[in-house]
Length: 229
Length: 292
Image 1 (cartoon, chains in turn yellow, purple):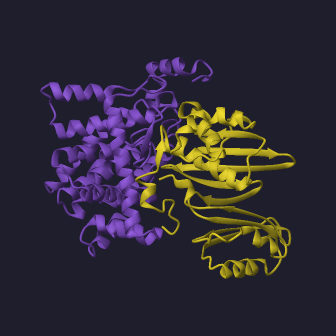
Image 2 (image 1 turned 135 degrees about the horizontal axis):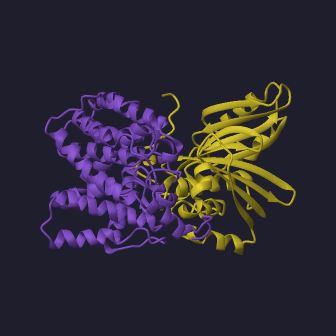
Image 3 (image 1 turned 30 degrees about the vertical axis):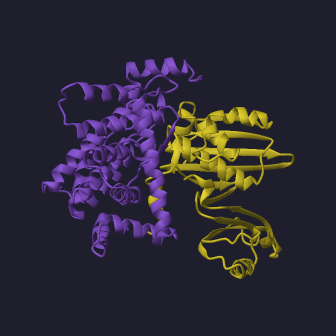
C-alpha cells in the first residue's frame, strides 16, 4: 500500500464541518478552496460543471453552496456556507452551475472554469470521501494535488537541467521534497512537475522558482488548509 | 500501518492500542503529541455539542428528518424500554448527530458526515454509563480512528465508492473495536468485533431518498450504533470472526466494486426509487429537481 489515500487519523475522525455530506459538502468546499488557490484570485465569472453523483444530488447536499463557498475562501466548518450565493453576488461574481451527463473517472467530480479579464483557467477536482479532496486536472494537465499537502506545480519547457535547478532552489530554503512527479506533452515542449513538500518557511516566495530558466508558470497550494479543525 | 495484522503487531510495543495510534499520528504528521491530543479533544467537544443540539430537537430544511432524537429521549425517560439504556442512549445520540448533520449544522465527520452519528453516539452513551475520564474518551476516538484508517486505505469510507457498507459499516466497525478496547479487551478481540460488525453490514447499499443524507441515513446510524455495542459484547465474550478481519475488509472493498452504481449514493436505486421515496423527491425538488 505504497500510495495511501488517507494520510492522517484526522481524515477519519474529522473534519469538523457543516453537514450534510462529507463528500458532497466538505470535500466540495475543499475543491473550491484549492481552485481559488490555483487561480490565485477571485474570478469575475465561473462556470462550475458537475458530474455523476455531484450532478445528481448537488442541490440537496448544498454541493453548489459548498463549491462556491470554497472558491470564496471559506473552510468546511464555516457557517456562512449556506449564504455562499449571496456573498458571491455581493462580490459581483457571475457563477453558473452546470450538471453534465458525461461519465468521468470519479463519481464526485467538479470542474471550475474561471475567468478574470483575459485570464482563463480550468480546474477539475474530485471529492474522495471523508471530506478529502484532490485536484486532478489543471487546464490540459492531468495531475494529483491532495488537500492538506503543500504542493508546488511547475510549468516549464522540457529541457535538461530544469529539475535540478528547482531542487537546488528548494534546498536553499531547506524545503524537503516528499514526492515529485513529472509530465511532458512532447519532448522539448511543455512539461510540468508536481512537487509535494513538507515544510515551507514563511519567507519563501514560490515565484522565486520563476527565476529558473525555461520556467513559465508556478502554482503553489498550501497544505493544512485554513484552520478546518 | 497497512493492515489489522500489522496494527496488532505494532501495538505490542505500546501500553495500549490507543497509545500506538497516537504515536503513529505523531510520527506521520509531524505534530507534537500535545497537538495531536488537543486536536482530538476539539473533535470530541464538537461531537458532544452536536449530540446536545440534536437531543434538544432540530429539523432539516427539507423536513424529511428531525425531532426523532428528542422523541426517543422522552421515550427512554418515561417508558419501560425493551432494550437497555446503554444501547438506546447510543441510538438516541447517533440520531441526534445525524439530525444536526441533515440540518446543515456543525458536526465531526466520523468517518464521514453521513455516518457521523455512530462513533459519537456509542461513545457518549458509554460515557454516561461509566463516567469515562477524558483520556478514556480520547483513547476511544484514537482506537476508532486507527481502525477506520486501515479500512479507508484498504476498502473505502465513501458511499459513492463502496455503498453504505463503507460508511455505516466502517463507522460501526470502528465503534465496535473502540468499545472492546475501552472495556479491557485485547487488540485481537477488537479486530474480531470489527470483523463481526462489517460482516453484518456487508453489501449495505447507499440509497439516499432524493439523494439527500437524511433517509435512510439517520436511522442507519441508529442501528449501526446498536450493532457496534452488540458486536463488542460478543468479542469481549471471546467470540471470534471465522473470517480473518483483514479479509473481511478486503471483501467489503470487493463487494463495493461489484455493486451497481445505482446503489452507490446516486439516489437512483434501493429505497430512493420506491413509490414513497419518489414521492418525497417530487415534494422536495419538484419534477425537474429544481428547488430547495
